[in-house]
Length: 442
Image 1 (cartoon, rainbow, N blue to C red):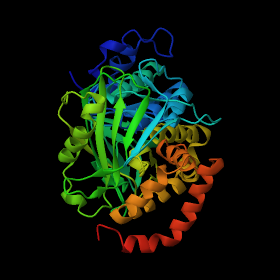
Image 2 (cartoon, rainbow, N blue to C red):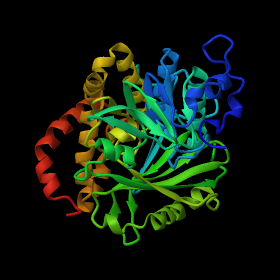
Image 3 (cartoon, helix red, strand yellow):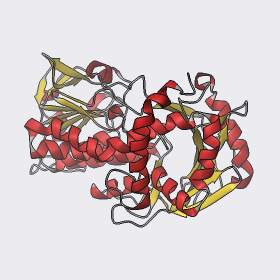
């Protein structure tokens, strides 16, 4: 079975908002779902990951008619580190998501050379004081199930594209089905055909990342701290701007992975599988690590977007380039931007795209821009090493690094971390032309 019928069985007991109408009635009891038919909706969402699901949950709960097109099957996996920052946990709590299936994480252990610092997530009034590890195939399935229970219609195994009329997006179509909607939300990443059609591709002049992960058994699977090794080296001994991670999943396994930035010299020749194996050899004894439980899988981390809004559409999450260049994390930004997009549509459909663009810019742009510029600096091995010593050299510096690694910094962040990022944003803005001319990749 494919299309909207895939994965329908688990949901037959859900009830829609309309009296005495089951979900099955809503999905297949209407000839609007016949191939070639046009369905009128309030929102069309392309992509059923955390951002798309968050948008669908908010929209459906507000009584909007929303259709989500997801190219994968129900319960599909997504290659990821599986770590949720306190910021991501806060966004999930805002959505009212039951997180009992996730493994709680209380802090981060940072390793740089011979220095190890184990830090608890800070207690603030803005975010919870804990994170989590929640494997993506379970997280994404849970979120999309919540969206369906709220009343959203989801078409699985359906790769959709935006429908353009005279330069304006008027909906989406895929699998022989067409949805007309005043607003289409692009939540399918920055590398697909939909992004290319709308100009929401990665900016080729900005850095990006590559990462690879696998699962492996370990008796330390229930630990409450993430572990990040900031001093990676490739097979030639060259310092790698990135980090290796051990994210305990609480289910007998750990998510082990490595990631690197495109700003390092020789990035195109970097062998991720070898880098992962080298890192696994380092952690094998202290973690009593078993052999990989699955084949290591790699993915690209977009960290920019040429466009994120246009007539009739807006992009969220990875599709908008919302990925922290200093840790590769983007789930929290996907959740936040998805909720914010729908909130703006509910408040004023006519100005939703402009208001969304302004608000996400105020919330994310300065920090992410600073991170991209900083990635040019650490792409130089002779700058990376002293930078790491500075990052973990003192408790105060380590606390700031923790805030950055936890995505706890933005334009409104109080205290030392916020001040440091504002100073860095100003300084690196002036240094940006030099940084680009002297980038390690040449």
